[in-house]
Length: 221
Image 1 (cartoon, rainbow, N blue to C red):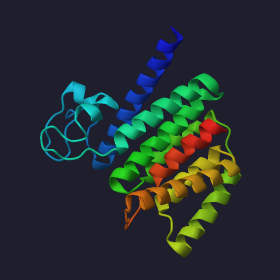
Image 2 (tube, helix red, strand yellow; image 1 turned 45 degrees about the vertical axis):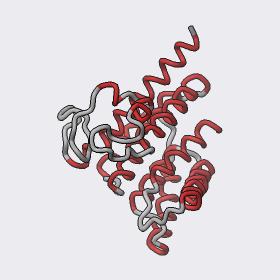
Image 3 (spheres, helix red, strand yellow; image 1 turned 90 degrees about the vertical axis):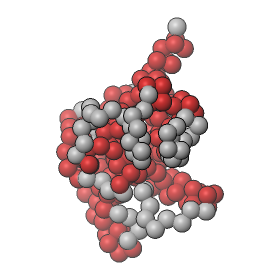
Image 4 (cartoon, rainbow, N blue to C red; image 1 turned 30 degrees about the vertical axis):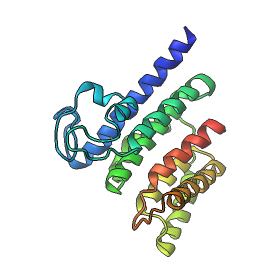
């Protein structure tokens, strides 16, 4: 019975991740999150229900759209798997469960937006600030991180403004040492991807790496 309960939490988490990715892809384009139904972004063909199953849908479609043969990004099943596993682990093993899951959900939303459009829209942070009523926070940490990261960004152009905003947002709720580890791990993951796949980025979507690094820091703390 316990294994079934764990599996249920995992499935619900993966479905929530899939929905958050959809919202992050549609809102910046002022599209409804209800209509039209999920479709291929290239050929606009509506997808069948079994093609939308989190994680499994990627395998069912054999990594490509069944209609136009466009390759489906690995990012989406990967985030569904990571969010499902991390949320399940947090739910059964840690304190401040709701607050941590909400924080990771918000970060996932920003990660997908950055991945798809290489932009993080500041006004989406407004609802996120509601966490301040439930989660321990530090204005001082936020101010320190924002000033330091903004200065680094202006001097080196090594970070985009969206990266600065997301990292400063995390510093509002997480200890400074955790935020530093997130920066180190995110940079390491980005470097590994470039070296392993020999990718040469003109502009990097860094927030997804921040998301994966935050998941690691959260479950290992």
